[in-house]
Structures are given as C-alpha cells and as structure tokens.
Length: 510
Image 1 (cartoon, rainbow, N blue to C red):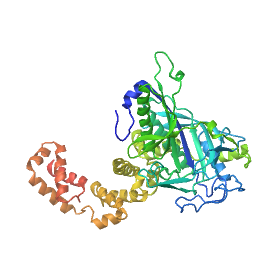
Image 2: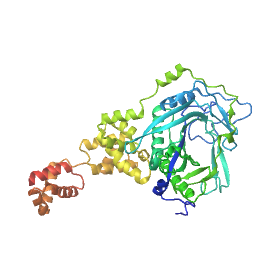
Image 3: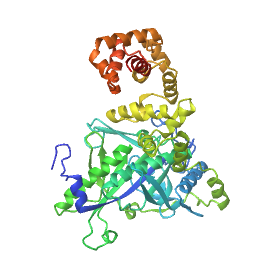
Image 4: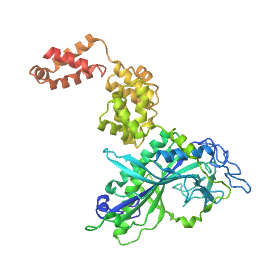
C-alpha cells in the first residue's frame, strides 16, 4: 500500500516478518558531561548563545594543537567496563576525513581500528521479562560536530531552505560511540529489542554519571541500522543466510522513535525486496510527525573516510592499575539494583515491569525516600501519570510533577485529608502549575468531611431514597452497597470517606 505521507511503498508488518529476517546494528552516540571539550578547554554547557564556546582548537584554526581530556578518557573506560568490554592497553586516535559545514577542520578526530573498549555485551530485559543479550563490538572516543540550522524551509532540513547557519558550540564536545555487533534472532520483536537496548543503555549511563543522557537535547542519539534477509528455507540455518544491504536511520532521539523507525524500515525494505529491487545503502531521516523515514545521502564505507592516525595526539595507554581503580568506581548494576528495589518495595514481577515500562524506577525510589509508601508511589507514577504520558506521547517526567509532590499527595491520602477522587483533582492542579498538593487542596477546598454525624445523615437519606437497593443489601447482596456508596458520595459532593460510608451502610442494613 502507499500513502501520500510516505511516498514509498510499504507492506504489512506481520507479512514482512513471514518472509524476511531482520538484522539490526545500533550505534549510540553519548555526549559526556565533562566541564570542557575533548581536545580543548572550551565550556560544554547546553543552551549557550551560538558560537560563544569556541576557540582556535575546536574551530580547527592553523597551528592550534589538541590535548586529550583526561576525564573523558576515564569516562570512556568506565563505560567500557560497565558494558563488560575489554579495555585496550594501547590505543590511538585517527582522523576521519569528510567535508561538511559542521566540521570546521574538515575531519573528525575519532578512533577507527584501535578503540578504547571492545568485545562486550549488555543484557536487556524486554517488557515481558525475557532477556536479550546485545553483543557490543566497540565503544570508542571521538568529538561531536557542530550543529547546522537550516532556515526558510518547511521541514527544518537543508532541502528547500533559504540559507543555513552553523553553531560550533557543540563541535569538540566529548563523545563515546557505542556500536553493537549485528543483532540477529529477534524476529518480530526487533523493534522492541532496539527500544529496550537504548533504554537499558541510557539507564546504565545515567547510573555511571557520565552523561545527562537527555535524548531531546541530543546528548544521547541513536543511529539505527537495519537490513532484511530471506527467511531460511527447509533445514538451512538462518545464520548461514547472507546479510542484506543496510540502511542507517540517523539521530533518532527518543526510545519510542527508535522502535517506530525500526518497525517502519522493516515494512519499507520488505516492499522493495518483494518487487525484486535492491535496497540502496544510504542514510535516512526519521520524521516524528509522520512516522516515516526519507532518503538522506548515499552511505559511505570506512574506506571513503580515508582514516589515518592522528599525528597531533599521543596514544592512550591506561595502566592496569588505572583500569582496576576505575572498575572500583562502578555503581551497582541497574539490573541488580532493580531486583533489590523490587524486594525492598514488595512489588510483584508484573508491578515492577509496569514501573520499568513507565520509566519510573528512579522516580519511585526518590518518592519513597521523600516519605511515600512504595504502593502509593507506584500507584501515581504508573497509574494516572503513565496514562497521561501515553495519551499525550510524553514521558512521566514531562509534567512538572516531582517525587516530593507525589510523596506529599500520598501523605494527604494516608492522613485522611483526601480520597482518591480528590487526589486526582489535586494532581491535575499540580500539573497545571497551581502549586504543591497541599496548596492545591487548600485553594480548591478539597478535604474529606470528618463529621461522622453528617456522613450518617447522608447515609440515612440515601437509604430512604433507594429502598429497593437497600432491601437487596438486607437480603445478603452486599455488592449492592456500591450503588448506595456512590449516592452518598454524590450527596456529599465527593467529600466523603467511601470506606467509612460502606461501614455505616452495612452496619445499618446487615
């Protein structure tokens, strides 16, 4: 089928997986949170005025010589160790040559055949609790590029723009590129595996404290490579089937988009192959609004970049003592931490998976530390807030609600000040920026009626008004009391304690 939005033919996802086996390769670029750039002393703060954090080194001016950032090297080693990689005893930088306006030197200082870390793996847990091992080929050091701003077009891309501007503040910021080996065997779950891997990697990097991993700001970006190969026939082993031609979807900047981009490319590749045509090896752009990719440029191979050793930098040769010292600084592995927290909180496996799927592990830990019960913290983060996030395609962190807010809200419910209905109204007020939960509750006049006499009078009135329902309760149909409780809540404008109302109703009728 075709659509005006895609301008390219795609096939049904399930049909594509009946005929083809997807193979992925994920390249994740991580901006390190060092105070200065990779090879100079310029600041790295996000959001500064354009071209205010530059110097002769990161602008590539003649005669300017680079110096390696020691903190960045240490962070690279710690990342490699956390990914179960081997750490090189000796490695060096290389020049990756290509011309583009965002590279003022016309080459990028990177690592090619001698990375700082190699041959690792990361086990990722999928939404149903199963585990997929992602093999890591390498994690190498490099510098980020500048940022081009294309002005005057409808899409923000160079095609159709009137002119372009370049901000070199980002040029030279330390980057670690983490490259997987070809990921096979995921089948129809390939998009889910990609999303889970990037999510697990983000969680690990956050725990290491080496990056703020804010995908929306570009400090963590994923290039998603995909190819399809025919399903093995008969007794043929799938691993013996040659890999197909890959495409690379560049700079995907959200977990949801990683999953969607892989899924879309599977359907697009299958349509091309079904027609007997060849996949073009190219980079592609992901469009969040339409959920499609479009062609970027022909994809270069390593030979096209004319790599050669960087003559202005000495090799990096960490001692084994240094590596072991850095190994001792690694935090508790995220997987082990989740199991410990699950035990501490008393969550079931299903409840913990809900927490993970909502991206709320850290939030709940902070909320419990702020005084909430584990049950209360989970209820709000994976319930109301996760529901809103799903509807509005946001993260639960995007609503301006803090762990302290949820702890205070949970306390108001526990103390009997609010019922669940009132608490949801209070949460709406917090999201709307009306203040803390207590301030919102006071301003809106939300508080449970504590006068037992008033509650009993409301119960009597409801029983008198609903004799048929009351008789059902007298006859032993206790579940019918729910209708009476609802009427009591309505009578008291939602400010009654439903549990107490139930007790009074059953005491009067049974």
